[in-house]
Amino acid sequence: MNDRKRDAARLLDEAVVWDNHLCMPLRAEDSFLPELERCRASGLDVVSLNVGFGGMDWVEHLNMLTYFRAWLARRPDRYALVRTVADIRAAKAAGKLAVTFDVEGMAPIEDDLDRIQLFYDLGVRWMLIAYNETNKIGGGCQDDDPGLSDIGRQAIDEMARVGMPLCLSHTGYRTAREALEYAKGPVIFSHSNPLALKDHPRNIPDDLIDGCARTGGVIGINGIGKFLGENDASTEAIVRHVDYVAARVGAAHVGLSLDYCFDQEELAEFIKANPDKFPPHLGYGGSFAMAAPEQYPQIAEALLRLGYDERDIKGILGGNWLRIAEQVWR
Image (cartoon, rainbow, N blue to C red; front, top):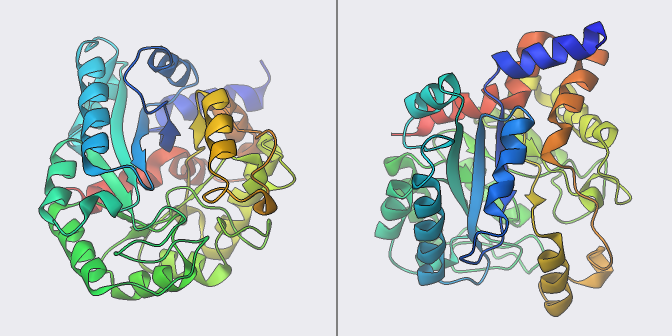
C-alpha cells in the first residue's frame, strides 16, 4: 500500500463517512438489504435509504418505513436506527452502520402537514419538494414549474419546526430559488450535480449552488453516470464535480450521495415502463452507469492527489452532512 492509499484509508477511519442517498428496491423482501454490508466494507458509517418517491402514496411510504425499520431492528449487532447525532457517533464507535431514511417528493403529505412530524419520528432525515414532476407543494425539474405554493411555504416552516432538512434535488429551478429565499436555515441538494459540467435538468445551475451555500447548506454529488457526463460514473468524474462545487463555494458545502441502486434490473424496467417520468430524450434510455459504495476509498485518494486539505476531505466524506444534522435535527 502506497502512502496515499494509506492516508486515504486513515481518513476513512477517522471521518464520519456518510452517503446521504442510496436506493434499495421498494418492496418488502430481503433480496438486497444484506448488500448494506457492502457499505460497511467500503468504510461508510452512515447511509440514508430512500423509502419512497414521486407518485407513491402515504401508505406505501409507511409500509417501506415499517419494513426497513423492522429488518434493521432485528440486526442490532450490525445496524443502528438513527434518531440523534449521538446515535451516529455511538454507532461508529461500535462498528455499526447507522441508517437514516429519506423521502423524494412531498406528494404523500397531501394537505396534512402533521405527516412531516410522523416521518421525522420514523427516521426520515430529509425530504425534497417534488420528484421531477410538479405537485401541490412546488415544481419538478422535468415539468412546468409554477413556483413554491402557499402550502409549500407552510411545509418548509413545519420541516424547520420538527428539525428535518429541506432538500431541493429533483425540484424545478423556480421553486428551488423561491425555497432558498424563503427558508430560514440550511438547505441541501442531497444528490445533484453542477449543470455547468453536464447539461441535464436534474443538475443545478451555478446560482442554485451559490444560494445553497449562502444558507450554510450542502450539495451532495450524485454518482449516476448520465448526470456526471457521458454515462461516466468513474471516480474521476465524481471528483471533477466535487472539485467544481468546492472551487465555487468552498469544500464545506460539498458532500456525497451516490444514488446507488442496488437492484439495477428493477430500475431499468421501471424507467422503461414510465417514459412520461423518465423521457428517453433526456437520456434515460439504455443502461445506467452508477458509482458504487466501493468507490469511497478511491474518492478519498483522488482528493488527496488533488491536494485537498485533510479536514476538507473529511468534510466531503461526511463531516458536512454531520454539520447539517447538528444544526437542524431536533
